[in-house]
Length: 225
Image (cartoon, rainbow, N blue to C red; front, side):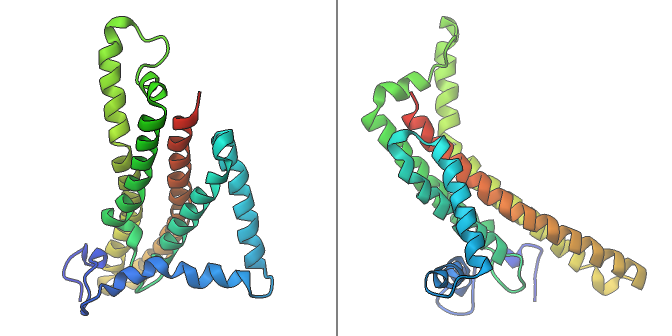
């Protein structure tokens, strides 16, 4: 029984192990069999999507790190599958939790920053002052750039979490009204939920793409000259 509006996002379980988080690895059952099962339309779709993403990410990365695009492609598919699984009934939406999204964003951002400041210190210092900045404004620009860099993992994780949670909450609110609705209102609620489900499907794809692209851009800034 749902005690409040946010109960569907509660990761607790009746067992000693939080079984809800198993949903984060369900994509393995779908993707990996494609390597040994007879070629199918689904396999061809994933291969085409992977090739398209590789070409796009490769343009954003420097020549030294072309192979890094596969890291961001894997990240894209991981988030995409978790977002999609959250649209099915009784499957826990792990991507709507900050503990999940921040776990993805923070190590990526931290590795980029450590690599940049340890290996390319002068290049990172130059990034703190944009070209054409007047002398009196330079200290303020350094402070602004430092703050904007430090909040990147927070904005990256909160963006994904908020977008996934907002749609689920709206569908839950509408679903709670069906018990007291008349036949005409019930038809309207069902049609509205179908539209919301379609919108949430688009949001699931867009947010996974945005997360992967922004991570790629943060990586490319370290190597850009």
